[in-house]
Image (cartoon, rainbow, N blue to C red; front, side, top):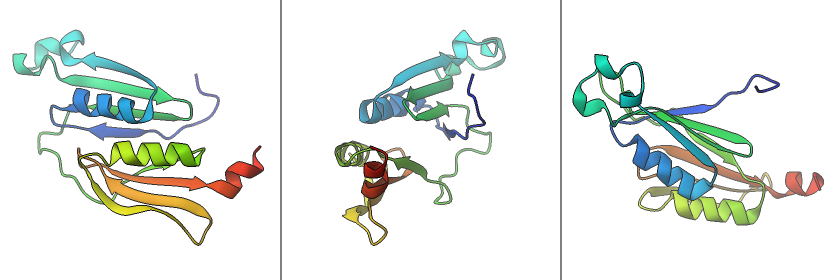
Length: 145
């Protein structure tokens, strides 16, 4: 049980949640759990073709939790630019690795670059249409040592 209130990201997919969350695990590491619709109490209420769809998934690794599902609303998914996943990295090696992996088959909006506010920063849209902002504040992380 967390000792404080947390805000976690929850992504909705349209049948490719398992593929996307597995990709994120390959990019970021961590532990990934899936619950299919077929293994849930909802199984008898939904069409047979949805049994292998993901009802809920959770990727946990050190300081983050990323969740996802194939339970798109009846109106369908609408991808927009109003929300991004912010990944604050703990090292320059991490930000370079995560950026390279997440941008694979996606679209880089801003390459990683050193900014006027003292961070290494970049953003991209991954191959699933999700927006990511990656940030590494070298001075902040060196002061923690």
